[in-house]
Amino acid sequence: MKIKNYPGAVSFGVLYDDFYKAYDGILADDKNCVNTDLYNKIVGDIVFFENDCLMISSLFGSENDFVSVINLPNFDNVQIQGLKKDEIKGIYYFSNGFVCCDCPSGMSLFLNTKTGVKLEMPKNGMCEFISESIIISCDGEIIYCYDWQGNLSWSYKAGELGFKVELNLFDVRKDYLVFNSGVNQSDQGEVVCLEKKTGKLVWKNTYPKLVDSAIILNNKYYIAVGNQMLVLDPFTGEELLSFMADIPDQDETILWTDDILLYVIAAQSNELLAYSLDGQQLIKRYKIPSHPCINFRNIPKSHKQVNYLSLTFGPDTLAGVECGVLSWTSEEVLAGKPLEIEEKPPMAIITAGEEDGSQSYYVNVPCESIHEVIRFGEITAKKIAALRGRQLWENDETLNKKFNGNIILMIDPAVGKEYSNCLTTLTERCNSFCKTMDITAGNGKAPINVSWEFNE
Image (cartoon, rainbow, N blue to C red; front, side, top):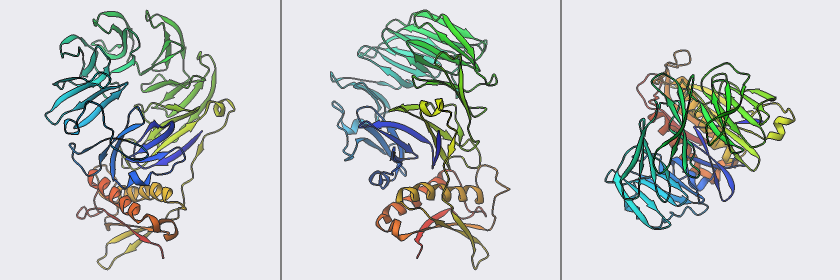
């Protein structure tokens, strides 16, 4: 079990059967190599779709400047059959040949690429599921089901859905929708099963508190309610089995499986516990460091027997500066292997006094590859800005009022000489981050200015 550090939030996707990470618009394969072609497009966000496609948006663009869905390795725009480029503002659903996108007119456009059938209608919440017969969207606490003529087939008022639980359609197979319905007026958690076509209630279970997460394992539903784990019959909702995880009865518990072990991930206490699939035997527990830490909204992914979990910094001084990826295999857990934390390269940070009495920061980046320069150079520059500059979060203990906003990265020319454009992109990304996060020089007057020089 290992932790690696990355700048910005990390998401995962599979392209051409290879596992990719996307951290703050930087695409990396499983060997941690930055895709420099995509990096130099100055990408702000990456969304993984099926069919070896991803959607990117410009770091400096407005919400209207979405780059079309592209594929690797040639970055060609994907021509979605039946869609014209001027019809697309942003694509938010792309699965099994079904597409939902926002149009420049403000309407939502739905497309069945297999049949060419289109439907344009006023936007009504976020699209959650599309099939050949129905479209499911959720707007606040109301779930809507439409047919392909735009007629409302049925609606259902869910419980309170907030930051901690968005609508979670954890089973859309066959004829039913099963979802975490938040909490009702009595503050009870609910799991609901409806008929897809009619919206008729099949069964509904209530629990003493919010249901944190739910998964399907061996054709049964496994749900987490605080530290209580329950196994349900999918047809009736009947409780078949339960066990108490060895954690406090707290919220923000993630239940997940790689089909070999069952994992209880406790976001509040920052622990990962591995159980046998029946939950009766605790195999191993791991304590995750406080930075970067577990985020309740990040769900693990598995690819070729390796499991990945995105770690993050909370809403504090270093928000958005640095995140991480926890990776492990069930074999490592069963063998009792300990948690390994990546050692960062030793960055020499020099505070240099200027003639006007202000101070600049020079950072020696001793990395042996452009990929590591990009990764650790961005983390370090953003961290200096967040700690020494003025920002929204209180940082009086680390603030340097003499800091003039200048951060200079010193790069080994043997590593960076062929990648000058990447180094320029690196500094542009750091400056854009500071502008977005409202981080300025220590005196609050000048903007942050990250630049680079060769260390000759």
